[in-house]
Length: 123
Image 1 (cartoon, rainbow, N blue to C red):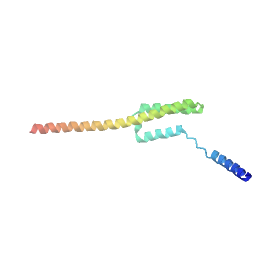
Image 2 (image 1 turned 180 degrees about the horizontal axis):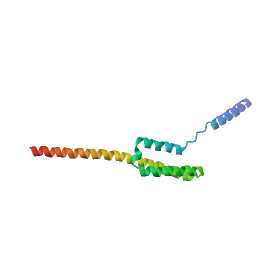
Image 3 (image 1 turned 90 degrees about the vertical axis):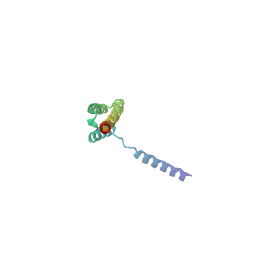
């Protein structure tokens, strides 16, 4: 029985040591948000909402300074606000695209009505 106890002790020690080494890497959320902002610039979302993007960049700078000052609550609050603002900018871009499509369809509809009126006049 002592061999079993010593084996289990060694086995449990190894498990604890290996699990302590397998910790997750810390994800820098500020860097992820910066990458997302860069992606927004590439995709052209910024052209739709330049004022909001300016506010987002100011909040990102404030979050970085708060992180340097080790104010975790402020950083988390700013991250939530930035993520919400980025969603807003993305939705605004989508609405702008849909609005442009609507304008094109309305122009086509108006042109079709003019053509229909001309054809009715010829009859």
